[in-house]
Structure formats: structure tokens, C-alpha cells
Length: 224
Image (cartoon, rainbow, N blue to C red; front, side):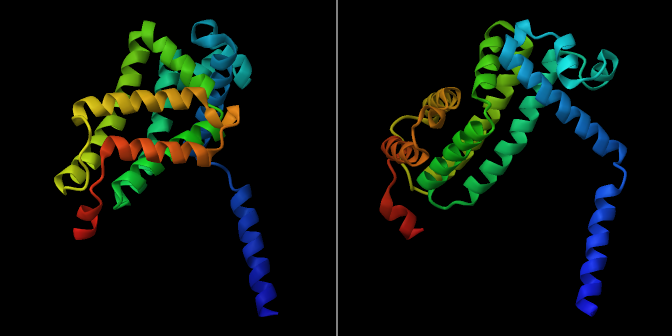
């Protein structure tokens, strides 16, 4: 009976939590997420230039006044999308820095990003943003800030491995990093899993390419 009473109490507690009114911050987050999803759909369907704030309002089923309280422009929406990606990338890099095997850490970080892009179905959106960044300075700055953070995280991780004598990259990091980020962008935009390329095959090829570029010194890692 005591167990049944406890379970009943917990069930009521869960129900009460679900029925509890949302805080102002939670409501704002919920509305922001709703707008971002609507904007993503409009950008993919009509392109950044073709999608208007009015169309985004219609997709989100809210008035222009309500939308502009959250985002004053399409550029501000792109900034919010980039910020959400930064948070996801931060989780990927945190796991990478905890991995003592530099090649494995690098490859797993890349695979986590490829998997995320595929599962979120964001390849077309990412392609649209990158095209717009060519002609829109505000969007370009947002993209360059995000890519700069990615490069800096990889630089720190790889430089530490170089300093430990674990890898001997084929070229200097100043040249390696822009190239590897460009390759990563190409993989994200093309969404190879959607084209039928299995993730395990992508990982196999990435691992071989990474080992060739970073040239790990097997004995060094064991010595450390």
C-alpha cells in the first residue's frame, strides 16, 4: 500500500508539473522557437530574399506586432538560429576535448555535426544562409563569427596534441583549419546520409583522411 501511495503521489506531482502555468521566460522561449521554426520553413521554401516577415508571420500564425517584439528583422532571426547552433556545437566540442585520442576526438566531433545536420533536416537551410552571406554583410558577419569559433576550438584541441608530440600535421594549422572547415561545410550542405551514404562509411573515410592529414605518432600517446 505504501508503494502504491508513493506512485500515486508521484503521478499527481507529474500531472501538476505539466499543468503548471509557464513562466514568462518559458513562454518567450516557446514563442521564439515557434518563430524560428516558421522562419526556417519559409527560408527553405522561398529563399532568404523571397521570404518576407509577413510570410513568416503567416507560417507562425501570429501578428506582425507579436513577431517584431521577438525579432526585428530576418537578419536577427538568422543570428538566433546561429546561436542555437553554437549551443549544440558547444556540446560537441566539450565531448571532443574530453577525448584523449586526437584523431578519434576530431572524427567523432565531425560525425556528430554531420548526424545533427541530417537528423534536423537543416542542410537546405544551411545552404541558403551561406549563399545569402555572399551578398548580405550582416549575415556574412554572423556566419564568420560562428565559423571562427569552430576554427578556434579545433585549433586549441589540435595545438595541444602537437605540443604533446602526438600529431605532426601535413601543413600548418593556419592552412589546415580553413580547409577542414570548408570540407565540413560541404559535407553539411550535401547531407550524404540523405543521399544513401551510410554514416559508418562516412566515418571510415573521415578517419582515414584525418589520419593522413594529422599524421598521428602512435608511440607518443602511449608514452604520455
